Length: 152
Length: 94
Image 1 (spheres, chains in turn blue, yellow):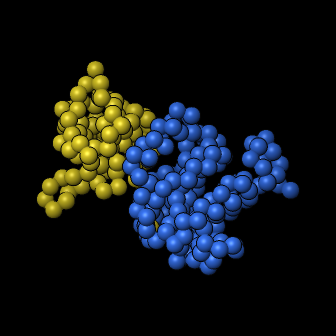
Image 2 (cartoon, each protein chain N blue to C red):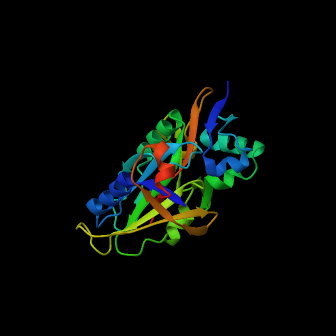
Image 3 (tube, rainbow over the protein chains, first blue to last red):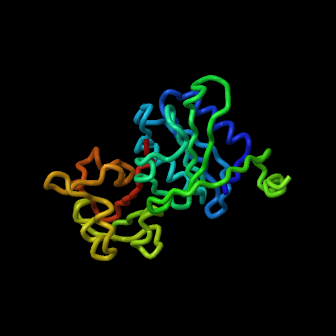
């Protein structure tokens, strides 16, 4: 299950809407081994494409060095689909290389840049096997309160 | 001194979980062969056969002292003792 703070959920959705019709992408980093997505890091889609995304290679290195220095890992890797459902494509599955990450897919196909709900779904992708998981949105980022807030 | 190679999570199955290993070689190509000797199977995850010649896989990024090797000669990029090599799979999809 993915437990994510409301602000971060909204930030991911806003990024996806802003970049529509191109795919948006980014990560949410968290302390290594914690499974807590805490630090929202939107990335530039170097492919600038409605059907593909890729982190710029220089920014990718900067991101990983920064996470390494802070003892963080990518807890969430997110991207948007702008014309199809929020389900990993064959390419997404083939290129997924973070076995510990939650792969979040947002689909903006219904409302594009406009207000309105989006599909927001989360998956584990390990060795080519996709497993969808529940998403729980909690009101606060404060780690101490997250646990209580998830079981209202 | 040797060359430090940072290994991404997905490839740590080849390094007994180690985040970094040491290698040797005057070029990236030689370093990868050296790594393969100690960590069998890792080479195939880094390079592929592209119409008869061996090249880096499209979705694997390798950096020497923070420079993407694609801009400094690819597999022929030169290495010296004390260099740091970082391997990172692309974060990409469709």
